[in-house]
Image (cartoon, rainbow, N blue to C red; front, top):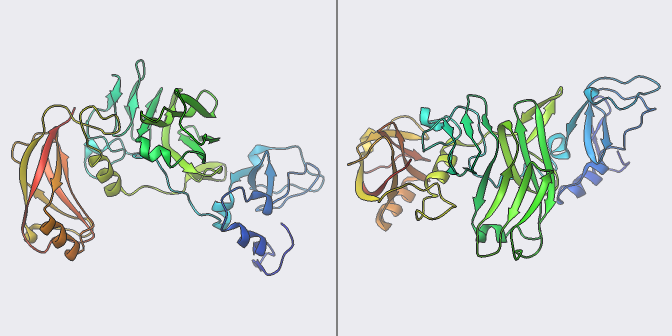
Length: 367
């Protein structure tokens, strides 16, 4: 590591922080060159030492004695400056419904991925689990520890994609075989005249940029894998996972309520490829929330009645301006209805409502 004062050194004499690293804290990656030198096959390394190889940062997990050795990947764990020193932190995941462990939300609250359509296997063109679509010839199957698929993609609106033009992005997929697929792309400064593939991992992970009048596939997977999680992020270093003794471990798990709410509020017209839209005509009804019936704590829950609701109904609340003001006053930051095989449960995040409320709701049948 470059010599610089002041320094923070641990009890073993390892430099944890220097002015060089502090300077990098306000910058995006790469920061690895400030932490380690390229791997030297003639040098000795202690457990916990760092090196660079092909531009990537590695941490030694097995001591390498005097005289060194040719590169042996089993003696090193790939890592990043973010994982080791907190430089830049963990980047925001720009994908929706990106965690695929749990067997699906059709089993009940808390199970990922969000799967409002309720099937455990999808094989028709169009939507599968929320926000993800498949093409002709593709299948997607939910398992407890991953999803198995041979192709899927996620769209985002043109207005969202416009903010990514000219930016460097990293696409990553963590697979069940302890395999991490990751690569970096840089988008052009303007939309193309016709669709263009930007491959992060050759023939496997891509960003498909469409002309400005169409929405774009911000994450496309082509191949046959069992996928645990996926990430699209700004910058040229993946922060989805890190290695511990050679095993890839996720850096974070998403918040279930936030993911569910985001998927539920993605409803638009039946022709909108962005939304996990339902089929048929939406019905307008009302849902009554009784202050005394809330149970639990953050999220608070209560079972509610939805007129005309079925096991395939998706319920969206539309509070009035006065009701919104009351919710804000009560400290409620999110209010939603979950359907579990025809049983409707209201969730209040942040706080429970302090007064009884009858709120307008739209009920849409989904497939």
